[in-house]
Image 1 (cartoon, rainbow, N blue to C red):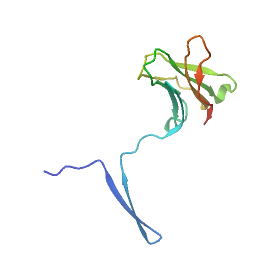
Image 2 (tube, one colour):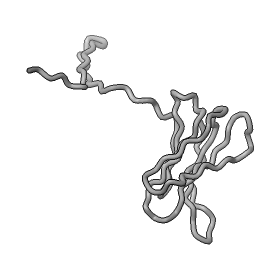
Image 3 (cartoon, one colour):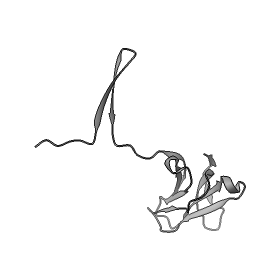
Image 4 (spheres, one colour):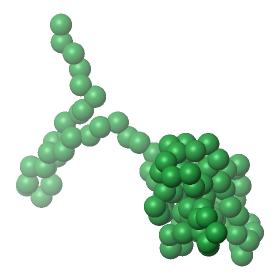
Length: 120
């Protein structure tokens, strides 16, 4: 019995040169992302940057957060906490386009540790 592979081979001739590539199922494109120790944040281009995501990436008893701005309320910094603990992801409600974001980790008795701001 013949089985099929999820990998497709594509061969193209460009300017007389043979070019071969393997294509694996298409995944949604991440528009932008930011990371700091214990926190990863991103938006999806395919969703029009309407949702903010944050993932807690460390089992360190500290919460992860996304700080972000939306186009409809530029200048207002919003915060989305990943409240489920290490390995969990939290998604914001739908809104206007996310125009900038940063990944943050809660610190004990000190300011939060955050990545640089990333613009969409």
